[in-house]
Image 1 (cartoon, rainbow, N blue to C red):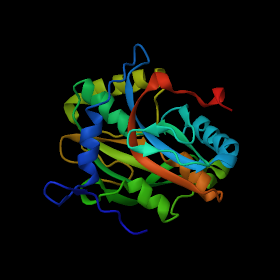
Image 2 (cartoon, rainbow, N blue to C red; image 1 turned 90 degrees about the vertical axis):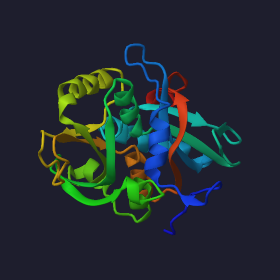
Image 3 (tube, rainbow, N blue to C red; image 1 turned 60 degrees about the horizontal axis):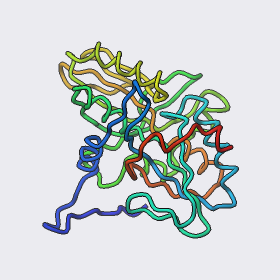
Image 4 (cartoon, helix red, strand yellow; image 1 turned 30 degrees about the vertical axis):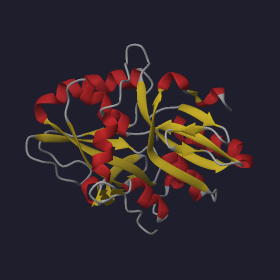
Length: 258
């Protein structure tokens, strides 16, 4: 896949994806106690005649635990979200982006360092290690989009056999916040936003990756795993990761649209 270089028109500087992440997380206002507020979404654009098939794929992946949430919003042809407009003959599916986790933690006073997106090998249902990764501060494109475009995932195999490679993001957080982070992540799961693959120990490798001194790692399941399965099964799907800010009240559990 040819890299899409994003430039700042004012000074012609390359803008790495980490800058977009930092901008987006400040707009997250999700309130776990009320189940309302803004979250970050990924938008998948698909052929309208394939929407039923793809929604069933998304549902299977979501219910397997390989997604942040079961919340979706269906976008019709001609409908716009942010700067993105759904073309004629196509539909859009908005799903929860994993960067939402960073925004929720930040609003609770927890500074998070997004490190990279990558592939994690799963064997017999257990995460083993990162096998491929792309750092957020060295790419202008979402790392999970790049990995998907090279057909490196095997999420379908994971669903059927318990072994495969799934999309995962890694964050680092200061050691003093560990207990509070675990409480917040539990509250998020109760509010319908889960997707935490593993929380590491202090100053300890997580899934084969070292963390900065006096920090611990949090491996968050990528919001693109549903799209990866659709792609693996031969569907044409155009994914716009970290696409827009959306109020979660505008979304519904996927079972309500199937």
